Image 1: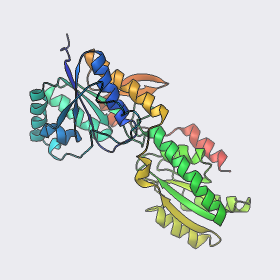
Image 2: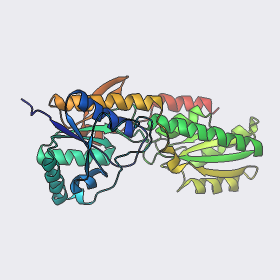
Image 3: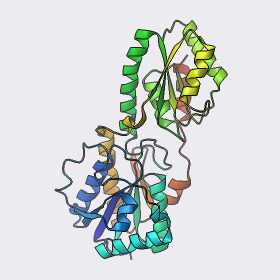
Length: 328
């Protein structure tokens, strides 16, 4: 028989993402609904070690659902990577009477939770929060949908300038290891070419594609580049190469950077965060541990944390084909 859960701690770690606050709110209100105490852990694992805790109630999480970032803050913790650091964290949790953890973040966050559980048999449940959408076991991570909408809005504005000045724009978006943002936003914004880590387009094919666009009558073009694309060392090297080989183009670069992480979460992310928070708390109450809450085929499901960490999130092959057709 599983131990009765009386107090749950919730924390955010890694990069912030729109929807994290909505998930914190959901965890706190689900706890309140089931008469369980909820404790917010500030600054991720670093705050856990230092005992930086605050009681969360149904009332003091009001107004969070529409806020970007994370009110619990986020920080990297070198100390938590050591057995001594994790021992301090465990002692701090026990001193506060916390029985289980909900960790909101990505791979690094889940890895930490996994090791912590293995060492102390401490119940943990993960909620995926990262705009890159690069976590196995879910079709959508928190913040991904909001980031897509932000990027498409930015590209639409850049296109106005590109068209006015007959320019070629390289727009770099986040996605060091996965091209989800670039692929979806490239299609959604009508980009002439999309460069992602999963598909090595090659410099020659890129030039061929741009020349084909020019020949078809396009006087301006948008190329969306994931930051992890392998064609050039970086987007500025791509710009130099194209300028050297296609002198008819005036080339500009826009690196969207961290603006993709901020902003008010979309309705989709708010609803997803609410669903995931409820599932995380109720799964812990049922005695489940070492799982990540995810979304597959519009159903909230559980994936073992180990699989979520070790599995590879793959881009949709159909979207790559759609992209090829749309950029004709």
